[in-house]
Picture 1 (tube, helix red, strand yellow):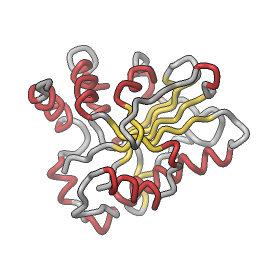
Picture 2: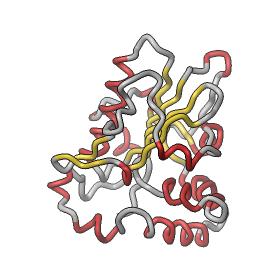
Picture 3: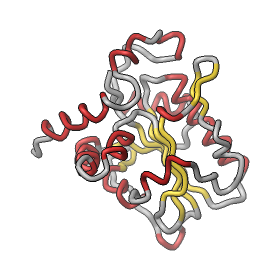
Amino acid sequence: MKNTTFPLLLISFVFFSACKSSQQRRAESEEEYGYVSDEVRNLETVKTYSEKWEVPDESLYIIDFENYVGIVSGYIENNRRLAKDLSQWHMLMVFDSNDSLISYQINCNTKRKNNDWQWNYLGTFNQYPPQDNTVKKYHYELNFSDLIPVIKDAEGNSYESNPESKADITIVVFWTIYHGRQSKNLIKEVLDYDEKYKDKSIELVFLNHPSSR
């Protein structure tokens, strides 16, 4: 088995220098921010919450965390900002049909209102395709194909993209169970957008991410 200890230590260093430390996050009231305590992340729990938050079955995926560690660690030397961002718990990425990133947000660059993260405060989802934002300029090298090796469906099968039926845009949502209401709100934001533009060609990838507490 591949040893991921060193990459994980590097990612931990990157993580703790971005946004809040885990100790600060832990100190925040679970009730206030809608966090879910005492949940074990396993497939059944993931399925339970994805159903509860109305994630379509065909859009539910699980991150292959060991391989994801490899991807993040690969950016540490040459693009530390991207490595920091990819170490966060909630991310929202939009890719076009040419594999290019056109919009990008992480939990760190949202605003808060009534203890909830506001994912559309930049007006990203007020138009089709989603509006580009200033964060994207730091991550021009990130492509959807970079993420494909770590995307598994609920049965453990690898993600498969059909070039003949490729959507015009693909929205990738990283979400966790632990962050309860925050994940629910992010998922709803994307589902509402998909419904609003249901006549457009959109693929949704809801990628469950193991939260580190």
